[in-house]
Image (cartoon, rainbow, N blue to C red):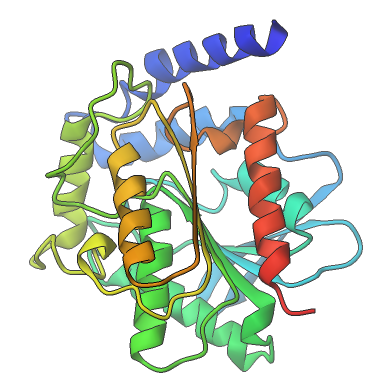
Length: 297
């Protein structure tokens, strides 16, 4: 009963406080400020530590839990490529550090409209390659991300493959945004977080002069052959549900080991409520198990 009430309360909070901020009429700088405040409700687990570092020329936040690390998780935060940061996602990366046993590296990649495509992808690649140069074995690296960061996770793996660079051990994506054309958005009865007008504007700001069907912008239009095992999680109450399902279909078409998990009556990137909402905590635990399962012993 308490969990049901909590779900209801969180859903209302997202609808009343977060969704209005994610509106195309709200200036991007103000969106960044307001979402930083909204993410304060996402709390990392007790005992989690955070360190600031520079990797590949980018500022990163390292989330740590416990005294040992089984590997490195490169985490690419969401925010439509225009908002969000390593700081906003400390709650989620903290819970992922505990669930995966990894040191979680979250870069502050460059954001649009100041830095459109391919800036975010270039930054993600720079951090990944710097980890390799530091001597971290690729099979000791996993990559994960939410929303835009989920699409960026897949795009990074595609670029690494095409450049014949070593691939990470696994990919994990929460509510991935993988079709910026918005031609197949889902229409749930309730969408507590996202508005198509906002995601549409963000897509234009990020893509710049590039076609939205560029596979490194919208991975569902690409070839995913050879990519590492992929876990996809999404909620049933989000306009990106079709993105998750289509990504799974394309990955399975291209023989990528793929697991798709749909969480009924939950919303966009509900995993940020891990530690509060039991189903979010369970989802992150499942993601951690996926990551640990594929890391080299």
